[in-house]
Length: 183
Image 1 (cartoon, rainbow, N blue to C red):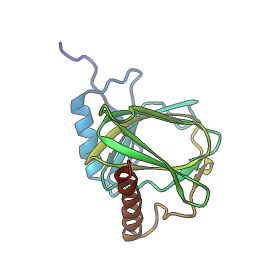
Image 2 (spheres, rainbow, N blue to C red):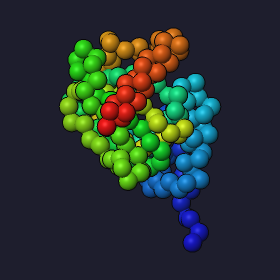
Image 3 (cartoon, rainbow, N blue to C red):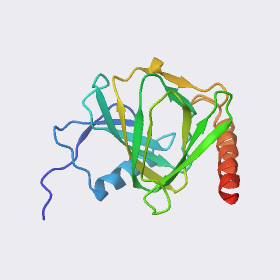
């Protein structure tokens, strides 16, 4: 069957694209396009927003992260978020206020992992890709207000030196490895 809808978008920034269509359909070929675009970004990540703008009440995004992507631990005020896996594998780590990891939530399309997760409170969390590429569908409530995202003081932020971010990411991966080895 011939596909009649081609996915098109507008570029908001290096890492953020917005669909410019009322109907958005995504196929495997377009996911490869997103991975290629993500590979060309500084932080090896990209998102396709399928909501119209940051003021929308519902935000839906296809998010692509490379294995080396660093997402600083953060919490969302007055928001929930959910992920539904499309491709690859990742771990979500939730933290206590002091930075001690609480839970590891394995997400992937594999039978042993969860396919879906939802976080409904202002818990600090981060995303750690396990596969070379990970793609997930994120849903959260809008509007987007940067000041409603709290970044943890116990971890490097997005502006920290890349080597500091890599060391912190390696520390989290070591924690994950030890956790899985104990099971």
